[in-house]
Length: 183
Image (tube, rainbow, N blue to C red):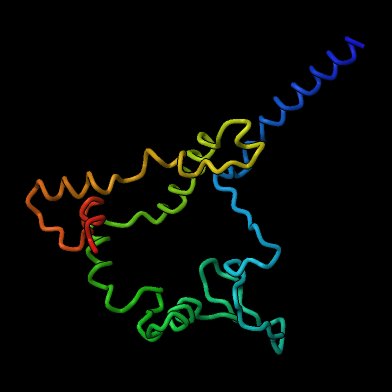
């Protein structure tokens, strides 16, 4: 009996150890969100326009990444209209017409066309290294905030830094003690 329980114990430890060695291409999950209700998730439902069958399947355009969809050609403008904005201010590039000066200033030193791919690869590597401990993964514990804590900004320290430089910060909220003293 003792050898059977010892064998089962070794088998269990081996299974757990191998289970922790997930596949390298597996996406790490740092935030485990789950609904506590039995109903649908209202944030997961996207109202899309109804699908329509084209007159001829041979006349369909080739799909292009980042291109428009025949069913939903202007999703950004539709979202702006749904939120009460003016959808006519959105340009073909997806930015508003008034942002031209801001965009030209931001890309004055050049734009790396592969920056999204590079950042996605770096973030995937970061998430794999900070995927949580074995029990955190087994019990679906959120480790998102802990993983990204080194990248977070201390708002009060940054505000103090700006004020010590003599720069005005008119849009900054008052500190916690000043906020508490408000009626």
